[in-house]
Structures are given as C-alpha cells and as structure tokens.
Length: 206
Length: 67
Image 1 (tube, rainbow over the protein chains, first blue to last red):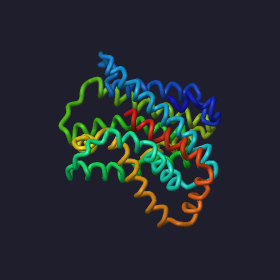
Image 2: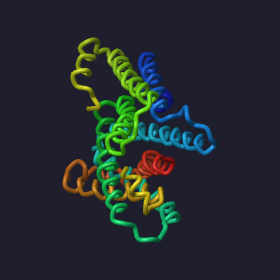
Image 3: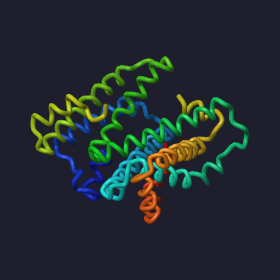
Image 4: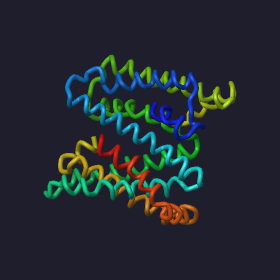
C-alpha cells in the first residue's frame, strides 16, 4: 500500500490501477485481521501498530531508492544488499552500544543472531532486491503480504499456537487480494489472457 | 522464534545490529567470490555515499529499530 501511495511522487511507472488498488486493500484488510489490529486496546499497542506502519513506509521508500539509484544503474542485487546492510549496521551501532547489557550472551542467543543475520536478513534482502530488479518494486512489495501467512504457519507448526477464525479469514483475504493485484498488473501491462495464464503457471513469488 | 531466543541475552537494538552486521559480512564474502560486476559496483556505490546512507537508513536502520 505504501509503495502505491508513494509511487505518484517517486516513480510514476510504479503507479497502480483501480484493480490493483482493490487487490491491495483486500490484502491489507487480510493482513490487519491476521496481525490482530481489531484487538488493539491500549496506547502501547497503538504505538506498536504505528511503529509497524512507520517501518512499512520506510521499507516502501527504500524500494524506490533501490530501483531508481541501483537497479536502473545496473548495480547487482548482491552489492546493493551488502551496502544497505553495512550502512544499516553502522547507523544502528550507537543505539546498540547504548542498550547493550554487558553480560556474556548464551550459546542459543548467539546462534540465533547468526542465523538471523545470514539466513533471515542477508538472504531475504538479496532475494527481495533480486525481485525488485526482475519484476519491479510494486510487485516485489506484494511478497511482503506473504509474511503473516508464514508467521502463522510457523506459529502453528513450531510453537503449537492455535488459529483463530479471524486469522483464517485474514489468510483467505491475503491470497484473494494478491490474486486480484496480479490480475490488475496483467491488465496494466497489456498482456491479456496469455500473461494472466503465465502468472498462474509461474507465480512470481514462489 | 529465533528473535525470541536472541532477545534472551541481547537487547532489541543489539539484535537489529547483529542481524545487519552478520548479514553484511556474509554478503561481503559472496561479493568477493562473485567478483566481476558485483565487485566493480562496490566502487560505484562508494562514489555515491549519500544514496547508500539513504538506503541503509530506510531499508535497515529505521524498520529494524521500529519493529
């Protein structure tokens, strides 16, 4: 949604049509249900929700930077990811130093941050920037809608959490919203039925 | 789940820092092995530090700290 919101100001080629807007809204309602926005009841929870929105907006603007400053200048995704992580680490370092406990961490926590850094951050951003290079920022951002689905899946499989009816409805809305958005994208690109069939046969995010 | 384990001994911002720093070290290895275009692009990005700072702030620092 934020990519669509910022597109008219930052990159008009990424502007969406009405069908795509409908798909994004449907998907966003699904994400809200899965995340549990309806359960926000305190100032702390509201601030938490606003922080998530701020993070999403920041990420959306960064995808335009990737496209306009790096992809369009043929910088490989590996190099783009390397620099975004390096600069990000340098910027976060002072805050990390201030909040450091000073105690020696346990082995489980150390292994967890190593896996988080290599698999969940480096590989994830590498794939994301590769997606931006191949399909554009608006369709790459659509992949973010899948995050709550995987979060729920892992919660059920690994942590034994239970699915609620809101979450099931939310999951269905996310999938429907993504399909509507992809169909709208096919219409925008003028590919007609052949293009739509291509997306169904080879979904871009799998 | 991994974040939950990491938070047992690290602050949230420390986790964000280590995620980015360890990820950067891993990617540095990939870029060095890849060589060619990827390595040449490093020089191109170094010549344009403002864009790199903007990207690092928007893609990593702000979202990781906020979340």
